[in-house]
Image (cartoon, rainbow, N blue to C red; front, side, top):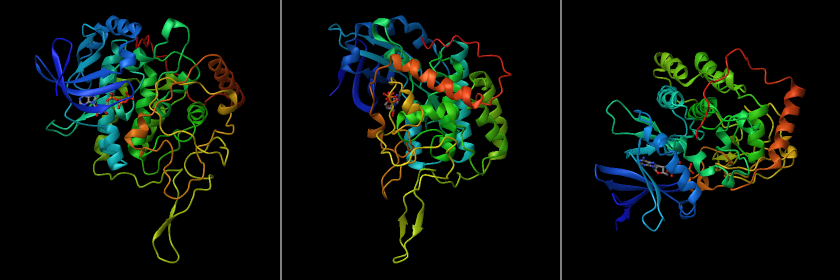
Length: 412
Ligand SMILES: Nc1ncnc2c1ncn2[C@@H]1O[C@H](COP(=O)(O)OP(=O)(O)OP(=O)(O)O)[C@@H](O)[C@H]1O
């Protein structure tokens, strides 16, 4: 049964659910729309409603073929209950669903999607808007386009608005652990370069089937962003690897700008023609060997050592306690966690058949789980712990020859 949203829209069917609310197929005066109806507790937050109203112009102003357009904001329904974003309806799927289905994309497809998202980011960054939550869930694939799927970035600025500290008293880390830039972990402001880092992480994941720093306890994930280098992927053309490395640089100023990233990626397309998806193993995945008796494959638990990842020694034997969380507000782990303490491992041996935490193959339900955790003095502890590590290791070794990103990084 249709439900009215504000005076102009009705919604009929759920298209998907996220941590902030439910996306519905709806109808408006100009035809079909997607309506993101925020959770009741968020809609009841008058501060949040005021922030949405304040950002109305910015939210509605972003127009680009690779950005999902926000057409309207519905704030209150007379009883003050609904808070909804009315968006262009994208007919297709999201990139997470495609990754879950295909596990890895052919390099050319991965690069085309990434270049399109980079185009969208270039326009947003030029307008002073930082997305802050670039991840496969927020990249929709319109499959009605004639020349192949068109990628569109959605949820611009929404995570930041929702997660903005109430009463202005605390500061939080906004983002999703696997895609969060090292400077955010260190408590620095999120400027445009955080989106480039997150998008490069997505590209890595599209190629590899896993993210460069994901897996295990979220504190360990954050630590890896700051202290580890992404393991090189075998069979990735050299030029593509160089672009990936540049965009995963620890120093934000070393990363490419969005427009440059898009054009560098497009230059590589002819060389990627016909390349199949990479044939590689997730470093935390158990090797599959033939059974001596039946010849059937049997899974052998990983020993923890070796594999592609591992610039920082990881503690063995600790149980993973989290699955991929799409939380946008996190407690920052204490120094012990960041130093690779009892929970800080991505390489916990797993029983055969058990899925790895943080794997791209996690189910949608698991991905929706959020940790609503607080930030306070721990942020300082992280800075100290990470700063100490950086000092001890002589910095990140990345070049600092590019000027700092000039954007104010409002994501307001
Ligand atoms: N404009 C749209 N058109 C069509 N479907 C959409 C649109 N926006 C979102 N969806 C669908 O709704 C689902 C939920 O989207 P939503 O943005 O609420 O959550 P999410 O980004 O997956 O997760 P989270 O909010 O936790 O980061 C998406 O995965 C997508 O399938």
